[in-house]
Amino acid sequence: MTFSNILLAYDGSELANKAFERAVELAKLSDYTQLHIVHVYDFPRVFIGEGLAPIPPSVNSDVYEVAEETVDEIKRRLVNEQIGAKVELIQGSPVDVILEYVKQNETDLIVIGSRGLSGIREFVLGSVSHRVVQEADVPVLVVK
Image (cartoon, rainbow, N blue to C red):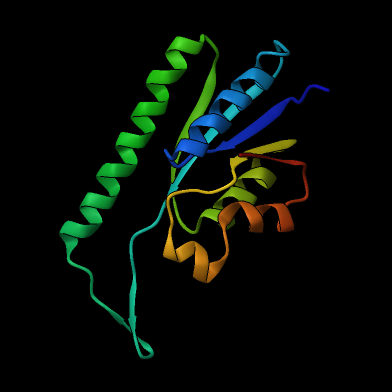
């Protein structure tokens, strides 16, 4: 089975790197497959009671810098794979961004690592991959 539009949700984690390898393999099966790679970042928020505590601008700057480095890393890896891919850096909630991207780009497969970099956040909110599997309208390949 080949796909025409594959979305790789990439966060730079070890499992995201394995997912990258699998997405590239699938994209190479057909000359007509377009690989989309999305790295989603979000600025940290701290709630105190019902209010939102201010975050120093330097923290947001650091978050954005790491996100840019992650995108640059995946672009370098793509050169070695000799395939074309669209790489995007998008700010927002990872699950929401991934699902909206799928709709806007007529993606027919999502490839994602089974766990990302989120630690405690994953415990509290549920993993991104789990939510994507539950909410996506297209097949999802979860790579372990």
